[in-house]
Amino acid sequence: MRTHAISDDLWSLIVAVLPAGRRRGRPWNDHRHTLEGIIWRYRTGSPWCDLPEHFGPWQSVAERHLRWSVDGIYARIFAAIASDLDAEDADLGALLSVDSTSVRAYQHAAGARPRAPHRGDLSNYKKYLDEPDDHAIGRSRGGLTTKIHALTDQLCSPVTLALSAGQAGDNPMLWPLLAARCSNSYAPFHLLADKAYSHDSTRAQLRRLKIAHTIPERSDQITRRKAKGRNRGRPPGFSGRIYKHRNTVERSFNRLKHWRAVATCYDKYALTYLSGATLAAIITYHRVRN
Image 1 (cartoon, rainbow, N blue to C red):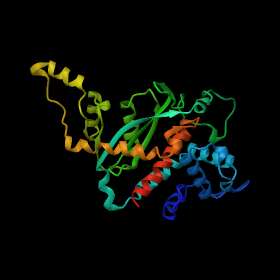
Image 2: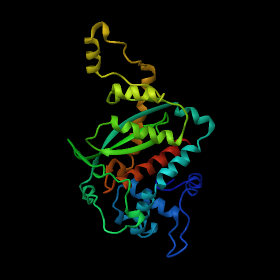
Image 3: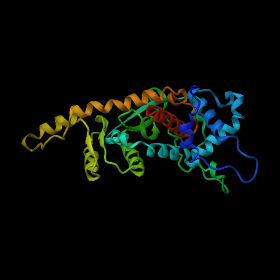
Image 4: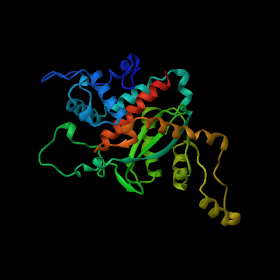
């Protein structure tokens, strides 16, 4: 099957979430054809203007992608597909791994205008209410970078995704990921994270939320605890047998970066880039389970 083609069983889940046709004005092009054009663009990493003609005018496909990004269509599709899991796959969410990966931002991705107040009201798809002020693009040693944060299951499929600037820390983004996961499912899970998430406040908050977790201590925390002598307290619980399953999040990033426009950020807006990464996660999520 072509890498940009949508299977019939996946389309049956997607079509229920997509908006209905217009009542006024020019009718939309076929949703399925348009979505395959969006997949082609993110899979190949080509500019929108190089979209093959059989997908229709590239301006229409790009605008539809922007509208769906602002309306949260991709997040709703992802939630609908995740909730369609078979009962025998329910235990795969018992262990969830969290981590982040840095992505180079192309030079043209930094050309978005800064957010500023507008005179009058804008069209709904131009308001960008969830767009961060920095467009999730920052500077690190590699130049312009953005960072993808992901929570994944044991089949290396992302469960939730979030973006931040490349120089941002991992630990603050843990809570948006957990909030998104808990809003879609109330099933209990065990969280696996590396030393970047090893903070006393993080462990305390996870205990308050009754989320079981396995996080190794940093070397400086071990040294500081041992320096207290008899009053050093007990070390946090850690199981190497459970922690070895954390590699699933690294493998999920490997799959996402098969999509060239996800491996490199070409989008000026974080909303559209996150939607492209979510679309890649949707395709990966469905193919792994079928």
